[in-house]
Amino acid sequence: MRLALFQPGIPQNVGAAIRLSACLDVGLDVIEPCSFPLDDKSLKRAALDYGPLAHLTRHDSWETFLQAPQRAHGRLVLFTTRGDQTFHDFAFQPGDTLLFGNESRGAPEEVHAAVDARVVIPLRPQARSLNVSVTAGMALAEALRQTGGFPSLAALQT
Image (cartoon, rainbow, N blue to C red; front, side):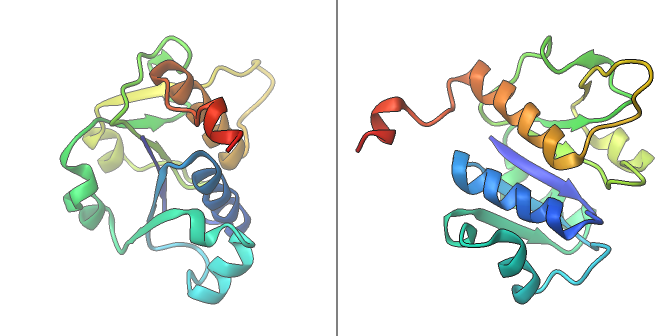
């Protein structure tokens, strides 16, 4: 299981995703360009002390991401308000990469066209969207629950 952020625009969201990746032991792909400098200093500040535990891979473009070795197996699942299935009804698989669009622009048509599935977290009609790091946490929790991918209780007690 992996998380992927498409051209993120808010450094704090990348930091939250790094922490999520580190704590739940899943890979994180950041697809650039970002709307902020994604250098070692900004990553360290955003990730606090979780950076060494994270499995972060930076890709300089969408095309580079698609050609990465991590993409050789598993499905690409886009979380979007234009999804055609709710995330709790979707059957996740252990090799899935959960993809999240830019906070203000979402994902462009080329991304929609390349994914294997588009899913949505249903919201009440008066609400527009959730924060991307909240969405990633909800999505990853459901995917790990379905696939048995959470760290075991025994591992927590060692």
